Length: 173
Image (cartoon, rainbow, N blue to C red):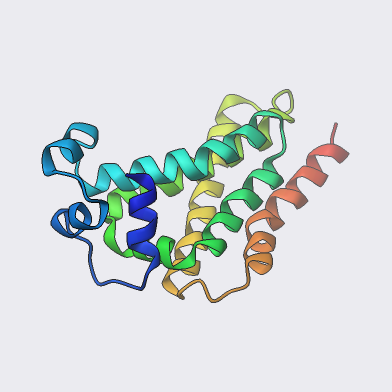
């Protein structure tokens, strides 16, 4: 079903994707679909994003490679621009922000692993709260502009402040 969703969303920019249209595209029955995705299309979107995107990025985050994890996600979005733009348009704002928040939290958790002795829990929480909103803002701006900004520039924007903060923390060790 994930591949059918990718196919359905990659053909062209759509105004919406209904369960009925997806079922026809995927050639599956409604019961099968809802057995796998009780939340409907939102559940399918969530599965696709978490299974195809966050899973691979988390593998790099877990070994402390937060910049590589950022690049994985940005590369996926840029390589699947039509799919991702359609997902962005079709998903509700709460679901979309939840995905972006998880992405941002994963990056920041990976980043802070290297500096856990230097920061108190309160400092870490404030840092994560502030920078996760900044990362989400960059992603939302990229999507709202139709992914027109080159992926290299977005990656630079996403990592800029973290790289500088990393340098400051290294100096203060």
